Length: 155
Image (cartoon, one colour):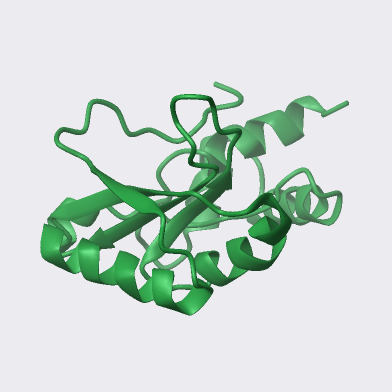
């Protein structure tokens, strides 16, 4: 069970981190606590495995990456554990998931790729295809972003 202080630290970390010399000090002051206490609490949450990762979200459109595609792959189930980590290891891949196929949709592994244009997304998929020897795939291009937010656990 999380303490109220832990919940407050999680809440502060799940938002925008100030761009300054000591961002954790600024976050801590917003919670009326010391920077040391804030960092100790965050480290404890990490040590317990409650915080599993900490990263920045890049607005890829503003950085020049104007095309992205979910690549749906039909991978033999016996190869998913072998192929998935290889696909996930490509720099151009930001997400890699295994999902159940259906009678009308045979794809079971998905990668999200980002590039400067749609032909580059196709080239990335071809490169991945050759690397893992999986030829059955399709690209689903994003046409409009309707929502992009990080999960918020505590407000």
